[in-house]
Amino acid sequence: MEYLLPFEKRNKTKKILIKHEEKTDGALGKKPEERTTAELLKKGIIILNKPSGPTSHQATDYLKRVMHVDKAGHSGTLDPGVTGVLPVAIQDATRITNSLLTAGKEYICLMHIHADRTREEIEKVMFQDFMGTINQLPPKKSAVKRQIRKRTIYYIEILEIKGREVLFRVGCQAGTYIRKLVHDMGLKLKCGAHMAELIRTKAGPFTENEMHTLQDIADAYHYYKQGDDSKLRELLLPIERAVGHMQKIWVFDDVVAPICHGAFLKVPGISKLESDIQKGELIAVMTLKGELVLVGEALLSSNEMLKLQKGIAVKTTQVFMSPEVYKK
Image 1 (cartoon, rainbow, N blue to C red):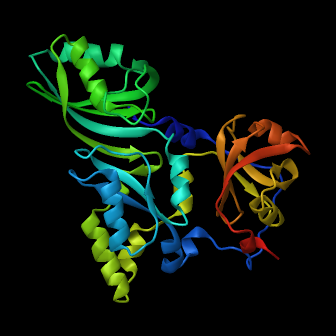
Image 2 (image 1 turned 60 degrees about the vertical axis):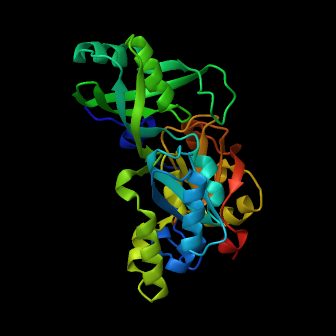
Image 3 (image 1 turned 90 degrees about the vertical axis):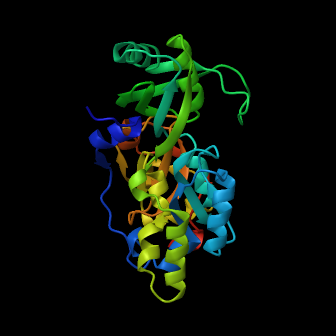
């Protein structure tokens, strides 16, 4: 069985629909993979392997200092004792973290139950009571108002049970408190349980395979200043990677500057689009070279955008490209 977050499942089946085929002007813009290291340092993403101990803010602040950047922002706060995937955007990319906040997450958790229970009892509670939509009351120490909220558990995989220790993988909706999930499982098991250890393995489109320690980052920047940027380029990701969980629309070159200035994207400006866009969904608008222009709300579905000849397709939420890039 594949354990995939909703957008990962969708990415495996969606198609790109061509509305009007068009070539892009090579003199304008640049493919993300062709950016220089200096350009990536101005608008890039680093996936930090957050260590146990510091807060997410403290870890991000340390990264900012070792890389000598003025701005850095993280997405999806991890408690001090929790480790794993912490996306950090630097310099002009910091605003993209808002788009990652609602993306699904995956964790590997070590749960300690307070009395002996059989595997069958543990599986029954996990799979019958904590799969799908659940009601969760955030813990007393949390950043949100303490009221019952509905959250979706996409999958649970038991990796190992040894005595009273249960190691499991869980994919969940953003805003799910795993410590509280474990506590509630303990109540259902009628013996109590607590979270002994937690690692985040996915945060939206980013996975544990892409994360780097603070020491890795400090070393890579040191070599960069010495004239070798190879290690730094391995860990610096273009801002476009942060919208990997979103549906996308690609627009003509001559549309880019106007929508960067604040104009809403209209149907005639669309060259191609992905097949499963729904009204009200937050989507990414791209150039034909694959550059992120903006994030906005879809006002039409994919089918409507494909068939209609006029109308507003996307209401702009955040612009990430300068109008000067595609200024002829």
